[in-house]
Every structure is written in structure tokens, then in C-alpha cells.
Image (cartoon, rainbow, N blue to C red; front, top):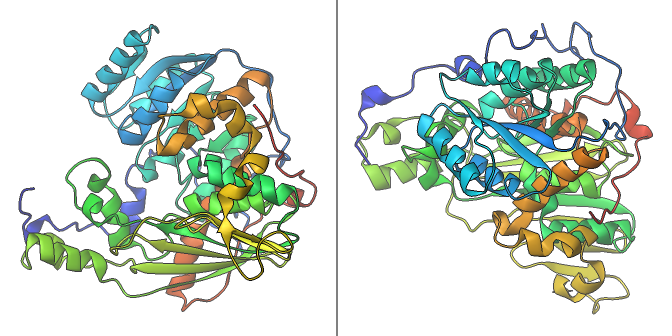
Length: 459
């Protein structure tokens, strides 16, 4: 890795940083957010409940934006899922576009059109291609511009996590989805992990009793990745320089939302957040690049560990931890607790159910796997074998396409995307205000009270 000099230090401020990549003219920006959480202009459409669906789409014609590591993994899945036509691919690196075109040819598929003129060429793709769905796996700050361009041009939108970075962006997605009548879904692969879906099945069967508390997060040593001169290292580190809060809540919180019926009988009410000091990235840089290297001289704003606590309207509590700058083994915690028992996903899946488990002792979750393995994994586990992240990536892509092809509601909707993504900026606000509580907007505008829970599906 080449040595950096002090002059290489990034000089843009936080506001400029968050606007990097925002394509002007893709959507009308809100003038502000009022105390009730609604955008100041209030020009929203009619809220729709979680049963929102569109007529069956078969085949599903897709344009894909951003085919780096995660984007390429999704494309591999889509090329082998029945009912998919990859019509276009967009990336700022022409070689990546050409690689996906070659993959399509090897799979016996027509060559997708390529778009790589500039950073905003996805707009041209959305305007000119006959697509049903635009799917994006770009750096975070591009997720909203791509989704807005898709929906504004009559396409459904699917985005990698997080769906948005700010409260304002969350409302933009909600507003545009409502006014265009399009799906806007955040693709949270951890919702489709086999353990997470087993926990959902157990919860639906009532084994934990009344659900009371959950602990989750994203605990992953990303220090080396953040200093790489390629891939996520080119953009992810900037978030640690300019932001202090829970930067990546969705992997842990996404499954919890489904377990606890968030936006489907309950909703996030308010949160408080606190960060420790920032030491990990600077220390890592000093030890690996030298004390005079620009990365060692850089000040990092994001605390090494952020702890956010969410309370729901129905009185449940959720702890969400972000820890990516310290030397620790990977974990999403995945703890769900009710009046009759609890489950813990990491480091090894354990469960305790009163009256079934040995008194005051954990037992292996595998003891319940045969009886409570999720039907979707039973049906599609073989097809998912070998796909990314233990197969969960394939299951999430399969499920999205299946719902679109059969005209079913999606497992997550735009309100879920907004509710889980908004935690990031709200945590930043709380941290900056000495852990003052911050209200979470009700993006459903009351429909959470009557939305039905997510069902246990088999296909």
C-alpha cells in the first residue's frame, strides 16, 4: 500500500461529505423536518399498509447499479433465479460492466446493456431502458439517488443497506414510493439467515412468550478494510471521520424488527445513544503505517463503540451496538427475550425455554432446528448452498423475485426501510446532545396499528 502524506487528508466537512454523490434534480428535497417527524412541506401521498402489492411481473426485467463485491454477488444469484432478465448494468468502472456482460453470456442469457459514462449514468439507464426493477449496491450515499431515479421513471427500486443516511432522505423515499405507486425495498440479507428465520418461527409459535427485549448490532473488525485503497476502503472510512453514532444498524436490527412486528403492531417510539471515544482507527494506522502517515494523523469522529437503546410504543426495548474499529470476533448478537424464554445467536446459537430447557441452563438451538427450521429454508436451502453469507443472500434475492412474479406483498416495504435506516442519523443527534432521547418518526402515519404481522412463508 503506498504511503500517504499529510496533504492527502480529506478536507471536506460533514455536510459536503453527505452530499457527495447526491444527484441534483432527482427529487425535490424537503425543506426541513418538523417536531412531529413529518417533512415540513407535508406533500406525501396516501400511506399504504404492509399488504401493498402490484400485479404479477413475469419475467422481472432488472437494471443493476453498482457491481462491486456485493453487487456482483447479487448478480450471480439473479442469473440463476427463474423469471429474471438482466437487461442493463451500470457501474463507473467499465471493466466491471464488461465482466457482468460476460457472466450473462456464460449463463446463456442475452447481453445486458452497459452504462458507465459517469457517476450519474444510472439516470440515463432509468430513463431509456424498459425495466421493472432497478437494484443498487453502490456506496451508501448513492442509494437514495438511484432509488429516486428508478421510481421517478416508473421502476420499482431495491437497495442494499442502508436505504438512506438521513431523516430527510428517508422521507424522500417514502414520499416518492407513495406518489409513484412503486415498491422501494431495502435488501437486508440478515433477515434471511437460517438462524434468524428459525428465531422468527419460534417467536411466531409463542415459545418465548410475550416478547420484551432484544439485543443486536454489527460487531465486526473492519479496520483493515477501512484502510484499503480499493472497494469499500475508498468510501467507508469517511463515515468514521465525519459521523459519530450507530453507522450501520440494519444487519442486527432488521431481524429484530420482524421478530417484534415493528410497523406491524408496534413501532419504534424513541431512542437514546452514546459513543465511547475514538481510538481504534488511529491506533491501527499508527501501528501499521507509521506515526507520520496521514491516516495516523487523521482525526476520527466515530466512537469505537456506539450503544443505542430503542423503546417501542408497546414498551419493548432494543439494544443496538455498533463496533467496527476494535479487534473483536464477528457478532450480530441476535438475542431475543420474552416472558417464557430467550435465544442468543452468537458466538454459538443457544436457547432457554422455561419448562423445556434444563433449569437455569442454556441448550443448543440445534435441538430445535428440525421442528422449527423455517419452511422457506427447508424449501430453498439446497438452492442457496454456496451463495454468499451462508446462503442468506440467495434466499433474499429469490424471495424478492418470487413476490414480484406472483404479485405478493414484499417482506419489507418502504416504511421498514425508512424506520431501520433512520436510526443512524437519530443516533448521531442523540450522541451530539449528550444522549438526549430522540423521537423516531412514524413513517406509516398510524398504519402500524393495523398492519398484519409478517407471515411464515414456504416459498
